[in-house]
Amino acid sequence: MQTALDSAHSWFLDSMAQGLNGVLVVRLVDGIRGIERKFVEVGETKLGPYFPVQVEAVSRCAEVQFPNAIAFFTYNESYDAPDPELKKDNGHFLFVAEASSFRRFVEARTSVAQLHQGPYQEFLLRCEDCIIHVLSSEAPVIDFLAEQPNLNVERTNTWSAN
Image 1 (cartoon, rainbow, N blue to C red):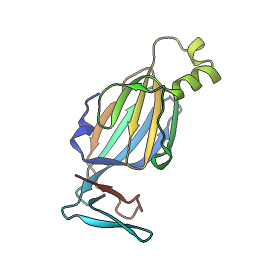
Image 2 (image 1 turned 60 degrees about the horizontal axis):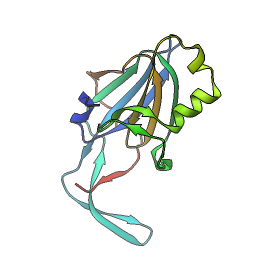
Image 3 (image 1 turned 45 degrees about the vertical axis):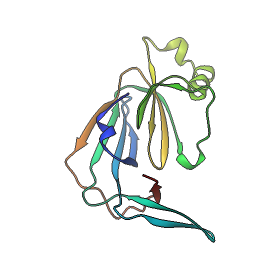
């Protein structure tokens, strides 16, 4: 799924909220790749050199709204593992998924498949620091916000090879 989010190098999660009307709002901040490569020290080992990826004053803020989120699951990107059931389209940050272990879990442990009237899709949103799976009856809406990022928030240190 190609979206306006693809114009960034990466995205960091800023916040997430679900309203009583079912809308799930995910706010993101643009991760900007640094200009100079640096070595990354892991214990006594030096890796790289890699480009640091950080939120800067010029980073854009975006909002991804899932208008009717039926179920969602989010977890720290560090804990991601291959999902042999995952079948998704091409994309960079936001994907449409035909199948996944998350979808199977929701359909087995809730009555969504039996009671939800109408079709729904699964979407997968990948950020630098988290992964979000969403079942929604409507496609997400992406907006760029006219605001600056909060630079006082401590974020995950990430690096880019290219």
